Length: 259
Image (cartoon, rainbow, N blue to C red; front, top):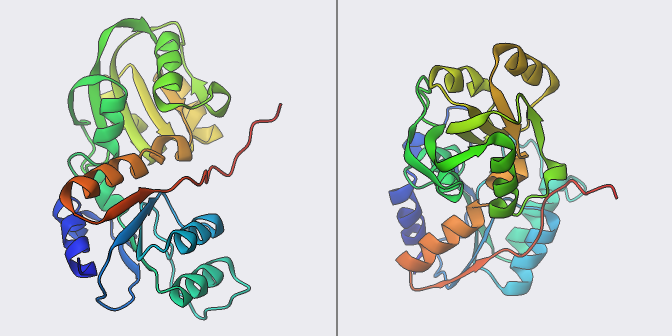
């Protein structure tokens, strides 16, 4: 399969037109229009992921986070991104990132997370004109604390990596969510009558504001909310291409438990 055909399959699901103006979804590196026989899927490029791609003989790495966000004035092997670029180009490995377009598209990160959280009646959260967030109803009756226990099990996230503000004993019916950094959508969760809003990268002042406004917020971490990308994209490409699709085995979570 030609690389452009592979990307057309990805963009049929998550078109570039959905990306935010500040984003850099699309090719990060393109090595000609060569035949692609092996694709590595990862949340983002790190040194270990680049080494994994080289060791596997991958032709393309498909990531969620773009490798390049800002204009590059020079490519220097002493710089982190420059080192990635040199290593990948030397090994003729292309990189394609599907970022905010994949957050928004039907079946993308946010829809996939909503399903993993066993929500019903999933839809775009009220007031979210950008189309990132989802909300839905839980299947059954439980408290927020009991639901957090389930989330830890379903997503395989240690609760030590989570932060919560609100009433953990409140009974839960409606959940809103935004993968990645979604604190800006807390007010949308309130407008949508969500009992709980789930996201990542919740900062102190946002947590204080949420507490004062009476909305329960669970921070499962940026990594925790988006590591699902590799599963979702790998499954899609395996079903829609006849090439070898490999899900990265590298744990890129930059945080460690302090025991």
